[in-house]
Image (cartoon, rainbow, N blue to C red):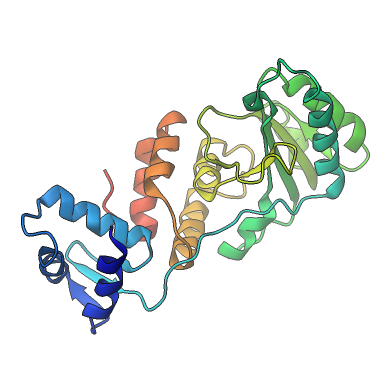
Length: 262
C-alpha cells in the first residue's frame, strides 16, 4: 500500500468505529475499479499494520496508535548460549557445512508470562537445530549442564521425569521453513530466535513441552499479544500447515483476534 494512501487513511476517519463500506468508499477514491479481492487485501494490510482492528464482519475500530513489532529475546542462561556458540564456532571451520546446518533456534518460555494470567514458574528452554546435529548438540548440553538442567530429546518418553524438574532444556529438530529471525545470524554465530508466529504454532504442535499451557491459554496469549503487537497471519498459518495443524490454528486465531480466517 502506498504510504500516502495509508497516511491519508489515518487522517480521513475521525470516528473510532467505522463500517466496512466506509473503508471501501475511501479506497475507491484511489482505486476506481477496486475489485473485491483487492479491497480485502487492503483490509488485511491495514490490520497487519495495526491501523484497524476487526470488531465484527462489518465493523472496525480505527486504532490511535500503530502496533509494534515484537522482538523475541533469548534471556536464557548465558552458559547455554556459550555452549551453542562454541559448538558452531568449531563446526564453521568445516567449509562443507552450509549455513542451514548451522542455524539453531533458542528461546525460553518465560517470555510468554507477560501475556498470560497463570505464570510458568519453571525454567524451560527450547533449542532447535539441524536434525543430523541433534545427537552432538544433546550430548554437549547434557555434559555441560547436567548439574543444573534436565536435558531432553524426547519429551514424550521423559514425561514422567519432566513433571518433577524445574529447569529443563529441550533439544529438538528445527522444522523446515521455520519462521526464525536471521537478521543477526552472523554476529550471533547462527544462534537465532524464533518469531512469535512460530512460538504460537509450536505451543499447539508440541503441547507435551508445556502441558501447563493448554489451548485456552494459547488463545489468551495470542489475544493479549495481538492487542499491542503485529501478528503475521500468513506466516503463522503457512507454518501451521507445515506442522499439520492449520485448521486448528485458524480456529484459535479467529477466537483470539476476531478474524474470520478459513
